[in-house]
Length: 297
Image (cartoon, rainbow, N blue to C red):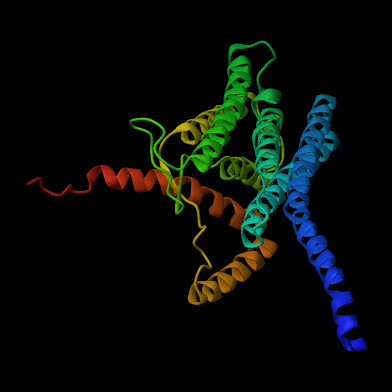
């Protein structure tokens, strides 16, 4: 046997080990994005607590610093939405989806898109406007709690439908990869974060009447988002974007344009995108109610 053949035979096991190591390393990439998601959620909660503490100090200087903390917390939730959209897409592209990764992602979403925005909205609006122990303050506390519960239920239902895509029982909606059943929790949290990023100053800076009006509106919004998450209204998943060459080119141009607009006008663009996504499911359901049904034979 020649020296060349012996050298090739000796390199084959090394190449196999390297490929196995590379394959194992790919499994870490989606988990790193999930870990970043958890980190952003923890940062948002800690920033919210610090901002709520500064509101109690009173004075314009304390309110300005509180607004900075609230803005940083809302931006952290926005970055978490980006990380959450990337970890699943990367896992599907590299075929590194694991059961533990799915469960870890759901736990991360409960923290970052459930607890963090609920606490942020509470501290920024009705938690600092209404007197502690008053009926409206208790109602706001309850609605924040229900937002977290509805979000957790939405994630649990999604995991069950993803593992068992067939009809679970009579009346259960069949899973469609092109759409989600119910409002996903990241866009719900993204809308709340976009509103606070647009106007980070706490609502306690207004007079009692204005603060009560704005806080009541936020209570109605968080209640509506909780309802949409547990509803059967369909929302576009955008999983088919980039599936073909033509759509890939369009998606790259669109994402680059949206990214630059967010960089230049983040307060306005993020709010518009969040409102558009949350409302498009409602509009589609409303239109379907008046759509003429085909005549039965």
